[in-house]
Image (cartoon, rainbow, N blue to C red; front, side):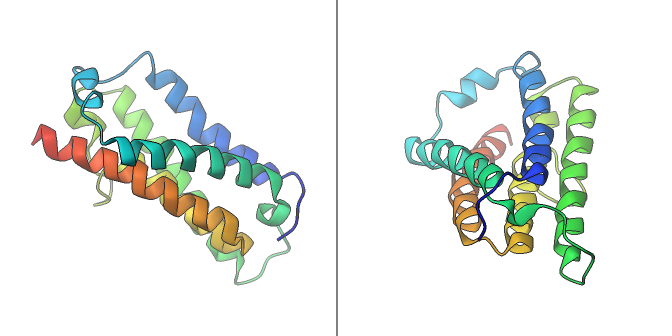
Length: 156
């Protein structure tokens, strides 16, 4: 692991945060009703994971692009998942913005809005061989995906 600024981490965080900022003004109908019932442990894991992932993605240069090798396929796969995440948001913003729209799968990936970025950052951690980001992503994933799976089950 190497300390230093990661421009790849910054790009990922921008790809993650911009749609979420737009989402604050375009939340699904009745979202607040579901958010009130969130599991406090999962919420604590999600919030701490968000901070840890954001910091780790920025402060380790391990994620920056290196000369091409077979190992680079981890970065390519990670980036494909982030592009799918952007597709998820485009589809959501063009929808009627219901809870079902928000929790639709994409290419068979359940609760895509939660799952895709977690998987993308996990693959980024593998690409960078960075255990700190990997552990942070697991914490985030348990909380974030867990909360969204609960919401998804509630709407069914």
